[in-house]
Length: 517
Ligand code: HEM
Image 1 (cartoon, rainbow, N blue to C red):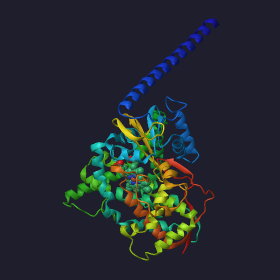
Image 2: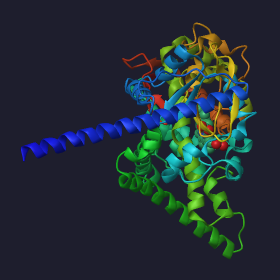
Image 3: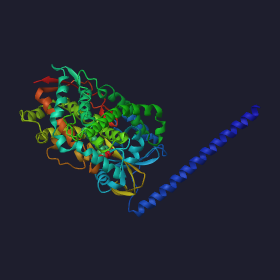
Image 4: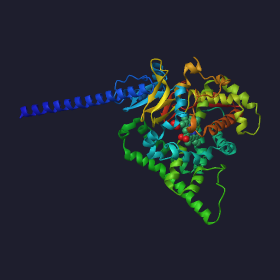
């Protein structure tokens, strides 16, 4: 009996080893054939072989994945790409879950992807697959005709007229300033900035402000939405990171429940709005005031176009998702840096005091040169969006990345991914000089906008909210500087330690003290 067991065990081990050897040989052979075909195609297209990252795990690239996770845990999420680029150059081919992924911080390649070859690169293959359960089909997750339609629909939210409506924003801003300790006490501004932008963005997206800054708020947006949204966002981010293996990213049922909890709140607003518009039609009214200071409220405009709740919800989610935290993080980062550079606060304050009590307008805020420089410098060092991912939809040639020098053209094939890494580009010493990691707004004095600096990305899918964000943040800074003469750092940790869940924010927030004027 013992003997039979031993034979069975021996043959099981043999069969397993044979199976492993067979699968490995087939995989290796497939890889070799694919690589030879690629080399032939690249040669025919006049391209060189790209610089390649040396993977310990050449099949799934898990070594690089775990390196990313470890850098993220250490609070330095951009270290992986920065080191990759230092070692291999500004365009390097890596393996992400078995798919070729080009990590790019070469401005010429990025410009090519976003302009001349824009039709060859799409957001949908990655964004839609990984984010559809939460965001649905909307401006961030679709391409082509569907994207054009979505973008047209949301564009008025960001129109110039809306940007100039600072009075509506100032109401929320005054509530935020009320929460700052009066006599220089310490406060973490990051959560407060998030509440400010939650209140303003919920107003122009849903037509109802969360009023989270108001002491007696009973709004479901303020009470429940941020927490539920965060939970679902972590689920979506984990799935995004796990790529093809997202099925291993925890319980799908739980994640879908988290998505549904957010959708249920938003569906409530949509149903209310559809009912309201029906009533208006029945009473022969066409253009009632929308009940908010904004001239364009996304939900109201979408409900005029369709009664399909899912379509409306998807568009709302696709705008609310980027709207919620990004601008707040920029503002909080400006405060983080100015608190550590009191001389820059002084310089900015003297520019701000120069406008006296003039009415704040888009044009006036734009004319504050040092203010613009401070915001640019903050975005350069700590942008809330560190990069962008696209998938190659048709064979494409990028001008750089091949050969020994990394300056020869390379061929990308359908299905390859590009990870445009802005964060290392923004601190590249070849572009910004040896002091690239220092906070020096003065460097913007004679700089023109170029593809070296793309915190809002570029091309036709550029962030539509760029002007709104810069105007709002400048407006807040003016009001803070008129009220407080100094800003003190109250954080024991001087460095910027980051935390990532799609957006990149300061893990320790922005702990400061405002000294009244
Ligand atoms: C400092 C703040 C912000 C930064 C740095 C930023 C950056 C970006 C970037 C880099 C993209 C391109 C994403 C990609 O295609 O991979 C983007 C797209 C987008 N952003 Fe922003 N964003 C900011 C604030 C906002 C705000 C406040 C809103 C909404 C109110 C918003 C709405 C959008 C939308 C709808 C898109 C998708 C555009 C499209 O695909 O056509 N963003 N943003």
